[in-house]
Image (cartoon, rainbow, N blue to C red; front, top):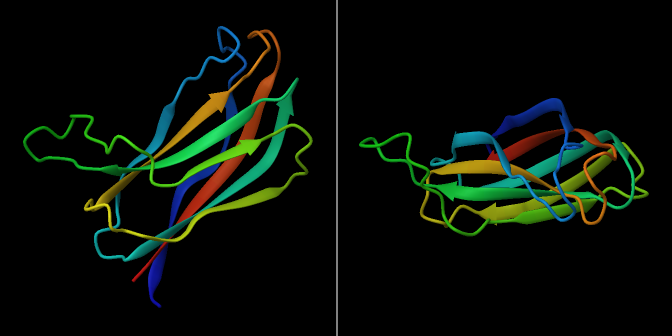
Length: 143
């Protein structure tokens, strides 16, 4: 099956230590407008390279269908539910770690574009504790 590998997240270090309160979440879209119109299925591969944490935080990784319009390209037009959602608890996780999400997920959302989002989840400690994660991600799209 011919396909393509999109590097949606090169190796990047995220510092979420500034979360203002327990249970606060700050979603961050790090890849938008990924054109998958010519492919039938996609699979995400997430890699956790390293992390520094206290307590039990996790990272939530979502893929959303996007519906951009030429009339208003800046409009935030995404489907209201993530296609696959992957939550990776970091406490005790052996690195490097590989998570595969949406294995062979069919591109049947009606969208030709995808958006990828990370959301840190800090359940109980205040912002003064470390919450740093280094990760990367690839999207494999197949016909």
